[in-house]
Each structure stands twice: as C-alpha cells, then as structure tokens.
Amino acid sequence: MKQGKLVPIHNVRKADECIDFLLNRPRLEMVGLGMLYGRPGLGKTTYARRIACTRGYVYIRLEATTTPKTFAKELLQSLYLNFGMGDYLPVGPCNTLYKQCTRLLHAHEDTVIIIDEIDYAFRYPGLLGSIRDLVDQTLAVVILVGMQNAKDRLNQINAYYFDRCNYFYEFETISKDDIRLLTQEMMNCPCPESLVNYIHFNAAGNLRKAIKIMHMIELRSKMNPIQAMNEINAKLGAL
Ligand SMILES: Nc1ncnc2c1ncn2[C@@H]1O[C@H](COP(=O)(O)OP(=O)(O)O)[C@@H](O)[C@H]1O
Ligand SMILES: [Mg+2]
Image 1 (cartoon, rainbow, N blue to C red):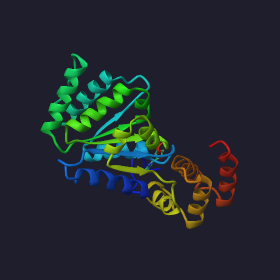
Image 2 (image 1 turned 90 degrees about the vertical axis):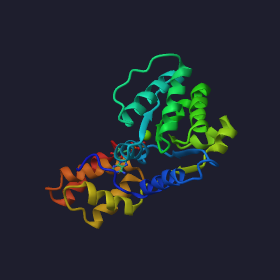
Image 3 (image 1 turned 135 degrees about the vertical axis):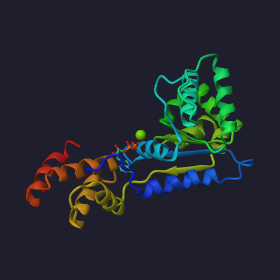
Image 4 (image 1 turned 30 degrees about the vertical axis):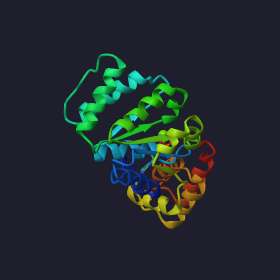
C-alpha cells in the first residue's frame, strides 16, 4: 500500500471547499470560523493533518489535558515554526501568550489553523472562549474538527458561538467511487470492479475499514482470488 497520501475523495473535496470559502470571505464582515465534523473513520484527522502539511496550515490536536494555557503555548510554538521564525519556548502568563499569538496572526492574515478533537473543549468553557477570542480578534481562518454531534453540542453550549461559525461540513460515508479512487491511488496490485464492490460492501461506509480490507487484499494478491476472499471474509469479523 502507498502510504501518507491524501486521496481526493468526496470528503476531501468538500472540506477543501470549506477552507476556500473562508479564505475568500469578505474578511471585515465575516469571521473565519468553520467546522468539519462526522462519525469516526471518515477521514477527518487525515484530512486535517495532511492538508496542513501540504498547504502550510497550523494543525493542533486538543487532548483531554489541554488547558487554555497549554493551548496558547502550543499555538505560539506552531506559529513560530510556521512563519519560519524557528523554535520558541513560550513563557509567561496565559494572557501574554494569547496577545503574542494575536500579534503574530495580525502580521500573517492568511493563516489557517485547524483544531482537531474540538470535543475536548466543550467541557472547558475557558478553552472554547479563548479560541473564540482568536477568531474574533484576528482575520485567521480557524477550522474546528469534531465528532458527529459537535455541531449540535456547539449550538447547545453557546448559540452565539454557533452563529459565528460560517461553514459547517459533515463528513459523509465512503461511496463506491471513493473506494475505486482509493484502490487506484493506494494499492500496489490491480483491483478489478468486483473487488471494489467487495470492499465497498464490507467497509459499510467506513474509510478505516476500507483501508484494512485493501491491505488484506494486497497481502493476498498472489493467491487465487477465491481463496483470498474466503480468508478475508473469515477475518472481517475482527474489524
Ligand atoms: N483522504 C484519504 N486518503 C487516504 N487515506 C485516508 C484518507 N482519509 C483517511 N484515510 C485513512 O483512513 C483512516 C481513518 O481516517 P481518520 O482520519 O483517522 O478518520 P477520523 O478522524 O474521521 O476518525 C486513516 O488512518 C487513513 O489511513
Ligand atoms: Mg479523528
């Protein structure tokens, strides 16, 4: 299998539209806040990480232990690296760190910041509020990435915040066309339409499962196809 690719499946194209929309918005009238959300295994994190790497966006993943201060430190370090200003060890009070972030973002208006696992911030009003302040006080595009109920949660927690979000996209289940494209771009062996159908049926819309099945097919590609499918069928219960 070819690794590290961002195959341009439907969800990738739609998420690109979200970022493009926000980058091209009337900046003085609209804030650059957007949200990508959806069920697990549909490619949200892969999109966020790989697009950040190829287009020079900032990617930050929240964790259960993230606080407003650790977030500000991580953001500041990422901004320094991103703007070619080298390594930086942020110190000082939380408020000063946010002011430094804001100052850097004023100087780099086209910055895109992707914040993965935003669901962790839902339990922490201080963290959610700090992110909103950055959105309100700068022209940066900030993309929140969350689980399938992230949009509803945001609305429940803070309707004002929700209103400021100018683009929502829910990642969809993986289609047969997506599977065909994935097999063409990632597999090292030919994958006839019958196998595309097989992967599509067994993955049941989940990209993570589709990748595992593709990998198993590839490992067994030198076997007789019927024997290979029987073996894979026997293993699918474990996915
Ligand atoms: N666009 C893509 N191109 C290639 N592989 C992908 C792509 N999106 C997801 N994957 C694969 O699918 C797996 C699951 O995706 P992930 O981004 O972890 O989903 P989510 O964050 O929605 O739970 C990843 O580990 C990666 O191998
Ligand atoms: Mg994820």
